[in-house]
Image (cartoon, rainbow, N blue to C red; front, top):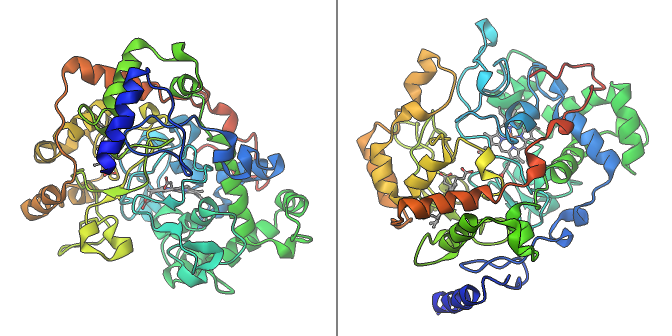
Length: 459
Ligand code: HEC
Ligand code: HEC
């Protein structure tokens, strides 16, 4: 029934050269063209308080939020790398440098392990419909938890967070590998290792204390937040709210040729991009919109598409080197190897692709989609982009070279093969490029000139 209905809508859309189909509530999904994005799709109607955004920018780039003062959010989500890091898997605290130049560090400070998942791009996360974050959706709406949001902190999550994006910002600082450091190295890392996030001497209280001691920050917090009158009132939740405001404001990306086309500028897209759009939205051709439907090319569901498991994994499976994806959140074995369907906005800028960064080019990621199981078996890990270190390298291919694991990932695949001509593939790629908002091609202005903490901005 549902499928027939979509098909009817779709055929009509083809006949009338794709008039935008009106959104039904939270965005139209499935194989119909979405309605154009509007301000109303975003929290605060897309216009958060500029002072809060400015504070958030500073915090996002400030290593003061890391245990060992050596890494910021921007290290893994940099404007110079499409709000990611250009690597298959990030190099967390202890590494040196930015993007693909980053190394694994030296001596006692060197990284202990790779971060097990690809750093996603942060575009449009201020839109209300992005209410499940992380590749497995472990930050998601759920009325029984504080702020109405489930997260790794469960009931320990403090109140006062603006939404899922602010909730997310509470967590990188608690991860040993990402920002906190190893136990014994600093007191924040010790608290993180003891799972003391929200306690009186927990990770969040210690970070708030650091901010309370920096005059250039205190003044801003007092001005922006009604419930902050003195330095002592600053909580890490205020910082998280400011960071979320910055991410939402600066990385709203809804002025691509595709957006302009949907708003009625028929000439905004090239003929080949329009041909690619038809393939993308056609159930008989690309069938992409059956998962990448909706305003931002995602229906926010979790699907298994047999992307190779590169890197150390999340500690799942018999030998700990697997990543069970969505099952880690739901506990349901049906969800094993399912990962979140990502938005495809600015996707041409966000290589490498997949939850483990397995594919280094858009072309390779697409060809994986066309025959997922064959691609899984043919996978060559040499395309993964990460700084080499023998002990880390030796753990990167354990899952993909384990025949049992590979067979399980293949068996879980839900993506049917697709057959397209080379010309159609070229058109599809042109369509994906038409999802790039030109404002996101030059994001140098996102980098603050200096930081109240006096920390350097170089990596
Ligand atoms: C060491 C690299 C690293 C650092 C530092 C880092 N992140 Fe991330 N970020 C990641 C990775 C990897 C993921 C995906 C993790 C997962 O899905 O399990 C992620 C996910 C996210 C997401 C979710 C995006 C989505 O679409 O679901 C947001 C938002 C985000 N990070 C913001 C931040 C902020 C804010 C900070 C600083 C407080 C930060 N990150 C620090 C690597 C990093
Ligand atoms: C069955 C659902 C499904 C269909 C159909 C589908 N995809 Fe995907 N796609 C996914 C999932 C899930 C991922 C993420 C996989 C992962 O992280 O391991 C993904 C990832 C991607 C990525 C990489 C994005 C990134 O940031 O890493 C691109 C590009 C992409 N898909 C394009 C397409 C195109 C083009 C089509 C149509 C030919 C298509 N997809 C059809 C589910 C689907």
